[in-house]
Amino acid sequence: MTSLKYTDEIAQETAALYEKLQPQFSHERWEDLAPYIVEINRLKKEKNAVILAHNYMTSDVFYGVGDIVGDSLGLARMAAQSDADMIIQAGVHFMAETSKILCPEKKVIMPDMEAGCSLAEGITAEELRAFKAKHPGAPVVTYVNTTADVKAESDVCCTSSNAYKIIEGLANEGHKRIIMAPDQYLAKNVAIEAKKNGLDVEIIIWEGSCIVHERFTPQDVKDLRAEHGNVVVLAHPECPPEVMAEADYTGSTAQMDDFIKTNQPKKAILMTECSMSDNIAVANPDVEMVGTCQMCPFMKRITLPKILKALQSEGPEVIVDPAIAERARHPIERMLKMS
Ligand code: 13P
Ligand code: SF4
Image (cartoon, rainbow, N blue to C red; front, side, top):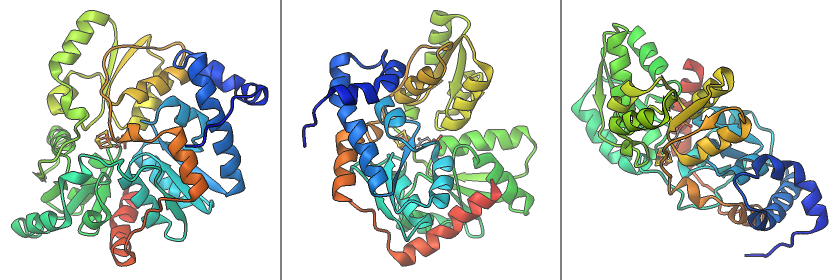
């Protein structure tokens, strides 16, 4: 790893950003990070590259070098619209594959190929084919947290922000039984909402889960409320339904972010990945972010030094077999149209 020097120019160039992020980083730590931020931002201009940063990126990545930030749906949309030559995906591998599928002409670079996802690893194309064969006629809705091979076997994709809308759309087309994979909790949460709204549809569930969100329990919410009093609790739909039932608001990472921005609660707790709370705290200084969080070990593999290396070497590049990409594009585009 190249070691970069913290100079007076770099200190000056990053002063405003440091002031914003200061509660999170000591000055000593900032002296390590700031040179990377400056060099990454210089190089990405030179190479006409864009950095897509998911809400779970640490604040140095999210605020320091992210050009487009947001949830899985937002990043997929923006990847499709970007006119950059190169996309650096600051997120996990399935997000980079989605970008490549939507932008086959662009170089899509993943700073760490090991940044996977327990959901994407939770089902293979072969397993999905066998599952479909057991439930003939049921359309398949797969979460974007899947590999390109799995998407290629699907009818429509969904994200946590539009899952209910997609199911509702299919139900309105007359489908009575719909397969949802691989997140059992997202599927269960959608099924509960469908029942509440009188939607006549049966959701056939694949039993995958997110290793981050499955760890939250309803008792966690009760304990936090007891400890922190008047606190607003927000939960991500990858959490178990019992946790969702205890929350005041549920939504995708971008929807939770919007909720806090709009409502400015005095105190809030996010039942989701840790960096999300840090990033929200930076943008909403009047909101006290308290309580618990869970770390995603995959998201945390993406660091400034790895992003710089990826930009310098223009690799490792994400490659998707064009025949698979062609088939995987349809469910993603259908989702973008339906949401
Ligand atoms: P969203 O950003 O779509 O809410 O997804 C969360 C997630 O777990 C991505 O890995
Ligand atoms: Fe996958 Fe969960 Fe990590 Fe998101 S938070 S990347 S769903 S393991």
